[in-house]
Image 1: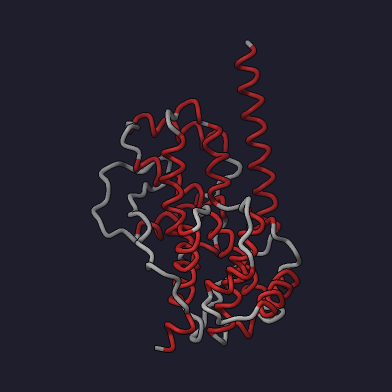
Image 2: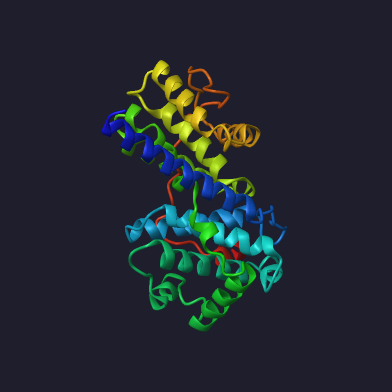
Length: 288
């Protein structure tokens, strides 16, 4: 074995160790539930996701931060602790929880912080700083200060998956960009919060490979064969198939003619729908 082969094997082993550690932590973390009620429904949650996307785009932040924010929110509202039950009975309180989770996500996921004064301005004076601080404390208490679970997004898994087959993918940046668009679609639907991030990542990666015009069908099949061979003990095929079917159900265009790869149906999703030009207040919107 030459030096290059040894370094390559060592790197693959490191990536697999990282994936294994993330998967073990994932399985040890309580799963989210579909907490939506007649007071706080899917439309309310979608409005807040759109608001977060609008803000990160305006300030040139990472869209992955929105996934972190919604993960914190979903874990908080699934916990049933603290003021979580009250937040599901009051749109104003739900919006406060959503905004606070976004504020927290920026602090832990971005190199620069979003000051609380600016946050209040973005909320159009609907809340006080003391309300945000109180909500942040309640969220941390309810999720037992375990913020790491929310930072392990589907894209974190996608990046590690690609490290295992990077020699077979000419431009991983394009694959990552495409997978991120699929993840944006998943972030908007609470269904995906009840699934493993690792499974969502696999489905998003399948869609990204399908989107890649420079990858032939035979090459994609070879990539999947290698990837699944290395990840067989980590892959939840039933859940991945369920996630992929859900992603496919959002299609508004004709399906691709490509065949399914390694029992993973391929995706041909549209990019995230355009956000509104300014943040939308769930409370104000639903009161109109």
